[in-house]
Image 1 (cartoon, rainbow, N blue to C red):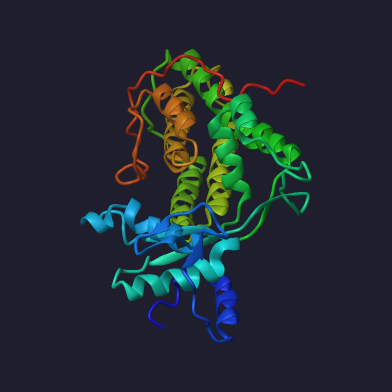
Image 2 (tube, rainbow, N blue to C red; image 1 turned 135 degrees about the vertical axis):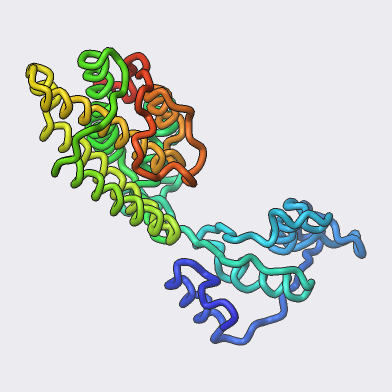
Length: 335
């Protein structure tokens, strides 16, 4: 009752409560060397080594420097563990050890699930494992990080398939984001000599996109605080798709053919709005895709952002910046 949210997600608490329905037996923290040759010798008996789940757990507070007076890393806000080692090691043994030693507990245990393939647990023996480094080498670390974050519901098992990876890479990253950046760079260079103009028009298309941003930024922050990163990425890409819809509605390539003053104002506004939308989208995507977002921000003529604070306001701060050279963010995969 001291901390009802100690285990996240909360449904994992049931496993702990089920285990605790039975009386707890004493835990022997040593093993005889005659039966187990390897291990850390007990300081008070050289014939015994330490039980692995005792010395392994101690590592958290010793490696963090807590025992040497450094309290910057421990107690942890969230101690991240896999579901297979939650009971009894991390949810029962570990809190008991800490309380007995008068050491503060982590504020929460964040328990993640497994990656599966076609619903089956990955295993070397069955040969259904995925070499993450191969995919990262071929498609980029940011693309791989985006996929696993987008597909993973923290706390649940998540299924991996190369087919789904390619769909995300082609659709979300290549078509929605990559093409948007390319179109913006091309239109700004062609229609405004490579400079981001000011926005002087505020009609329905601009109002709707800005409203979508306000809703998106609020939702994404809330989802992140609840570790629902996959939903946060979906909301962010809904905003990216909103920018693409705005481009289609405003059609800068048509406005550029007009010689009227209002169409010129709409053209300049559309370029400014696209730039602002891209800036804001990359702020939200930065933690998952830092390399790609830095490249987009440099193309926008801005210093790469490193935090949300002070960067999520819709304020057209890029006015006057010169856009960078055209770049291919997501090369088409080889067939």
